[in-house]
Image (cartoon, rainbow, N blue to C red; front, side, top):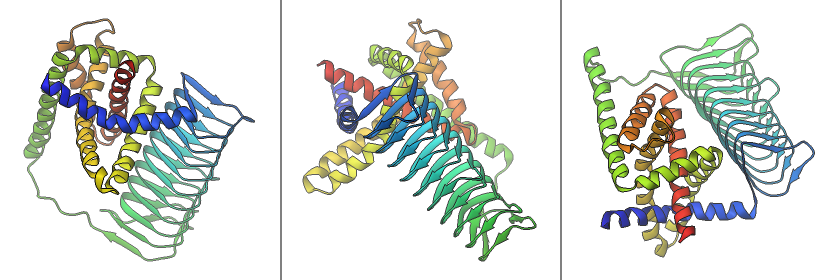
Amino acid sequence: MKHIKVLTLGLGLIALSALATVGIANAQSFQTSSTITVAAGKTIDSMLFAGGNNIDIAGIVNGDVYCAGQNITISGEVTGDVFCAGQSITISGTVDGSIRLAGQSVVISGIIHNNASIAAQNLSIDKNSVINRDLVGGSQTTTINGLIGRDVVIGSENMTINGAVGRDINGDINALTIGSTGQVSGKLDYTSANNPTINDGGHVSGTTTIYAPKDTPKMNGNWVGAAILGGFVYFLIAMILIGTALALIIPQTLNEATAKAMKNPGKITLIGLLTVLATPLLVIMLFMSVIGIPLAILIMLASLIVMILNTPFVGYMLGKVIISKNTKKPFLIMPLGLSVLTIVYFIPILGFIIMFAAQVFGTGMIMTQVCTRKIAK
């Protein structure tokens, strides 16, 4: 019981950030459903918090937008910043502030008046789009056909520029291609094992500096395979041990959290995203005052606990989906779900995106459960 109380205390501390954020959301516009639409001609004069499978913002939002869903489309106008996570994200409208996006496929075909920070598997900046300031991010495939006003700082496997970059390109790029209409007004300064391909008509005004990737100790292929396999087995065993302990100690909590997540995945994802964004800000604010430092340290420790518990919570839900929603065999559900999730984690690039999504979704599951228990009491 002592350990359960310590765990509950830790979760309660980090829940402060979630409760504070949800409190703000309740005072603003908070929408969760399978399909969320802000129709053309409609205006929302507040921040918008949206969580659902399909989100379509065609109207005007006079404030920031926080959203999480499967398919997200913003074709209207947002006067503040945009923070969104989803499988497919398309912004064809106008954002007066900055955008911070995470998704499998991200397409920008509108006007971004400030900066863009994007993590995606496939990132496309279309021909008529404009990002007035900097583009920062990471993606497997990056295509820039529009205009970037200042710098591009990116990590990408394949990057093609058919548009214009106002200043420099920095980062880690395996294969960089400047198309016949591509223009870079500054310099190329990046790490790669390959020289850039500059087609006829393409132009780089500044100097080009390429840094060779840092040498890593050469290992026999068998040793590399053994190291990867060893890491996989260690992670899987550790997660199964933690997950089994949770299934033994809090089976009802796992079932309740899973049921809520299956019923409203958009809301769970949104709460997780808000918590992930709000917790660092809360910690920084507390560190600014002497009396707040101890609480900041406790919240950091609680955050670490939540990060460890995220995978077992999501793994349990995945196991339920695979076997049956009605099954009541936690010691079968947990190992199965965790095994599948761990295998996906070790897939290059895609695994990183899935791991991030699981962290956000798992945080939402835990925070929803903690907040529900507190309200019930």
